[in-house]
Image 1: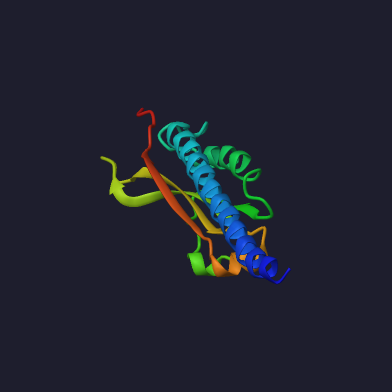
Image 2: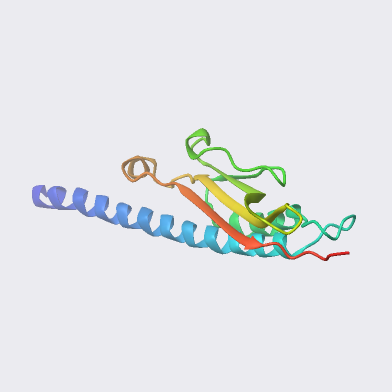
Length: 152
């Protein structure tokens, strides 16, 4: 019994650590795929009222539909289209923010931002609180795509 007690605790710690690391990897891969889908839709959908501007809101709902089922126990919030995400340390634990915005780093011929960006940023909840504190987890993904619009 004594030998079993010495072996079972390290075994459980390694097992729980492996499960937590696997879940973190899974969440990161899903977040990347969701952001990719969202930024593609936001960069190729134009506003009905102005075909020379991208509809940034078109990328939010598809991202949320892909992201929410994979983020177990995590609150996934969407910020208004056009506003960048807050800094990573300003987002509470157990929360992930989704933001679609125009990156002013690259301008088109009319002087407007040409890159559409989507950011998935935050701290996903951990299923095993004790192990999650030992292995901190955060997401900070930004994907960009050139906006496609129609010129009058």
